[in-house]
Image (cartoon, rainbow, N blue to C red):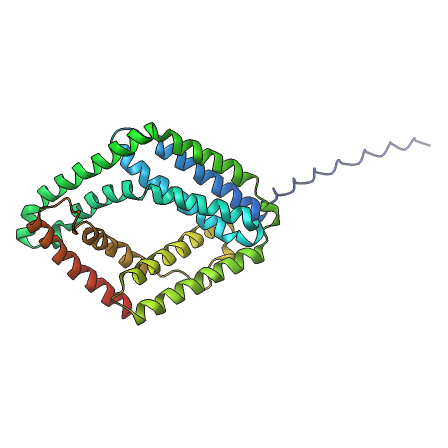
Length: 286
């Protein structure tokens, strides 16, 4: 009787697919985003030459994004997170005069198409005066803090403190409550503007509240879309208030300490008031 042939060996089962990489917890994702923004602020303040003006602007934007991130995590981070936010705010405000110096030059450059012919002829003089003021502000700041080394070192210290915050305590519910808080603050700011449309500070607060919510919305779009503001962020309102900021800046620099001679100051002030009122009327009536 012929021998039975041996059974073939069992086929090897295919390897199990590797499990998908775990998504970072909400707190860890917020921490990593904030640390990247602090690192960017340091890089921006290290820029040289004419790029320093843009570097200051970008550094301030990064610092504001870090503050928006801390606001989202404020319930989980507690007192240490709030204290760090306050110190970041002071650093950011300390850079404001430098940013305003560059922003004034940019605002004047954007005036061209809307300015009456008589003012258009004076704009090169206005821009030249604003540029001289900007360079003077930067030179004095660098004399006190060469290469912005002290500020950059301070941001590095902030990064160390931020990394040690209890990000593991941050939960989605904390972020959702923070977003809801930002939405409520924006709604209150809109109501105050509606009650006092001629009050400059009310408009300033409205712009800040809208900017904070936009920053948080943009951040959450990449990290956790389900936590984004339920009502969205009106881009047309944000754009209008951003444009109006040019006119606020012009008016601020047409007072008693203006870099402009009296006749130029009066012309700039008249145009800025007209443009600003037009934007505010449209925004408040929307």
